[in-house]
Amino acid sequence: CDGAMPSCTQCCRTGRKCGGYKSTAVFVHYTANSHAPKKLLPLIGAPGVDRAARRIGDNDHPGVPSLQAEPFQISQPIDTTSPNELTSIIVGRFVPKFHEPPFLFDSGTSQVCGAWVEMLPSIVARANSGELITAAVRAFGLTLLDRGPEGKSKNFRGLEAYVATLEKLSSTLQSPENCFRIETAAAVVCLAMVELMLPKSDSNTLAHFGGLGALINMYSPEVFDSGDFHAIFVGCRPVLIFQALTARKSTFLGREEWLRAPFRQHSPSELQMLLGDVAVLSGILEGIDDLQTLAPETALKSAYEFKLTLSEVLVRLSKWEGQFELKKKPGHIVSQRELSDFWFPSLLAANVYIHMWAFQIVCFTELAKLSKLFPHCFCDGRSDLEISEAWEEHNTRLYGLATNICQSMEYLLQDEMLLYGPAAAMWPLATAYTVLIEDVEGNKEQIKLYWDFLSRIRNRGFLSVPVSTADAHSRV
Image (tube, rainbow, N blue to C red; front, side, top):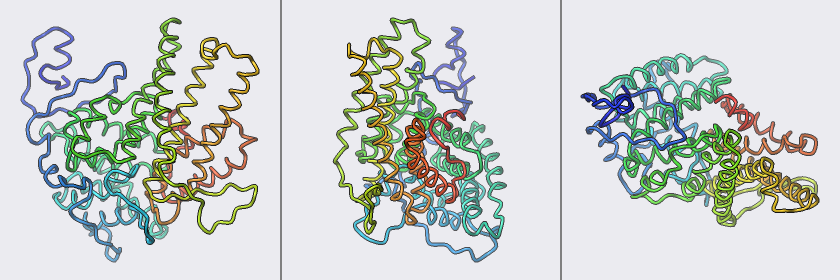
């Protein structure tokens, strides 16, 4: 029984009357169904809504914690370190610090993969010892120490803490007395970050975020329109969309209700608006992959629809160009043959531009794929010379976008970005690499630069960063 309300799926399929059940929630193994929208499970009882989380975070700045983590120095046996102290380590290692204005940092919704981190102090402060979130914070904090300079002289046993937390998570999810809570979501994200820091574990990272997405999808999108629920939603939404694009599978986040309801009380930031512009992309990728399984006429009709939708997405993306000022890296002298690095006025601007370029690469690549699958229908009667010139223009455009991303990496990988910068760089950098390897000889210098960036990300502690989006897709 899957616990669906008011009748379970098994009874619905067999035409039987469902006897019902008294459990407030039942967690089941989840497999995404991309062909039909998933029925939303209604909220049952107060525990499922987690009213306390709403009250604590319900203010004009969602995601900004009521408690700030104090700086913490490791001066005692690590076994006696409290969850609050470990939380301070996480915040101190992850959240960027900037010393010169006018660097803008929005701790609510402008980050790609870090808004949830600043929620941890207030979440951990109201948790009891031994709860899932305190175990997850311990696993994440100790792993950060293991991967940091401290880990060169001492083993903090982060892996042991991670395995113990996995067992606690499994027990929590299987218990019928426990509904999905904000603490559970934060714990899952902490575990996903630990996986990124373990060798060859990126597939497990995807599994953690996939599980979190399934948990979120169990509830109505209105649940996530305020408080800590809204903050965890906007904090995890980028990664869930990247995961769906990597897996080339549609996501519930592309549905109309999920594009609007979570932002009823808090308007989306520019980054969240950009994500809304491309939320349907993963469904298009899945549809394109399935074209060859369809009857010819059906496949052609679907291909035209995909081409139209991709063109619409590109139009939306084009509106972001010129929204922020792009500058060259200050104090950097560039030779005539050398490409200069981009420098952005804010972290928000960097995130918007870098991911806009990556999304454009996806769109143009899929349009080219459609042209190859249906050359007689998508070439519009052009001559061979015109088609050849169009392909050359296409390759030049993709290379330009990939180069833009590479020119932006120095900004994200600067020391002041701490762990946030490398984490935000992973997906767009991997997307750029899929373009560069199409011409290994011609892009030799850029590929060499790419491997340098990848090495720097891994040296920061993210050992499981995938080489490319295709590489990550093969492990899904």
